[in-house]
Length: 107
Length: 152
Image (tube, rainbow over the protein chains, first blue to last red):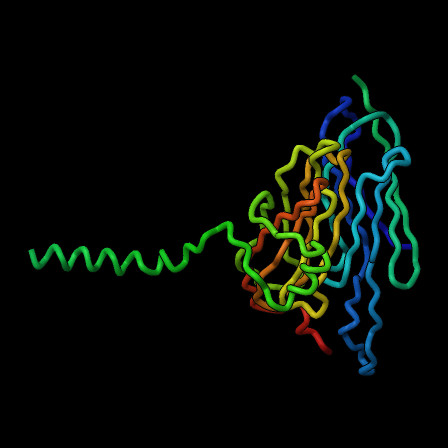
């Protein structure tokens, strides 16, 4: 359901540092807001985001309501081999999302 | 002669606010409300100053989205790397903003994100290293419109 955008370099040399950027479309409801009827809107944030590079976990974020709506993250990882970066995340409502990007690593 | 002493006096008073503002940059303040959390993270180990650099605007018009860049000085090798980065807030209703888990494969311990802030406060970032040491840095942020104002 949730949409995400990922930016990674398409090509890299082995050992290169790659900046990985990810932005997920998510309201990150804090649980402190009320709707028009005065009912509290339940907290719903993307609480975990995991990034795996060819199956190996390279980055994991545990987030709370202190992260802005449409969470954006940038981190680094070292190019090892051609393959896929897979992002998986889950929110408080149990909704899961995933997105992947492929990288070509050539010497 | 009288004039000179007046000048020195003026120069001294002019420098006074500067001295007050220039707090030791690498002193991690003890934030009372966060002490239990810090204890839980470090397990009683000492928080050391340095190695963590925070890049956050000192003044923010809107607390809903404040850009934050954290970089930790580390080789990111097997023996010396950042295991986790904890971002804590002094005044948010939930003090733990985020926890980031890194490993040597990251190559560089640098993370950028956008955070919510409930008013002007101090942000405390703790880096847990592979050797069991904890390094911290803090940043003061002035927020004119808080993220929690919207209670419609």
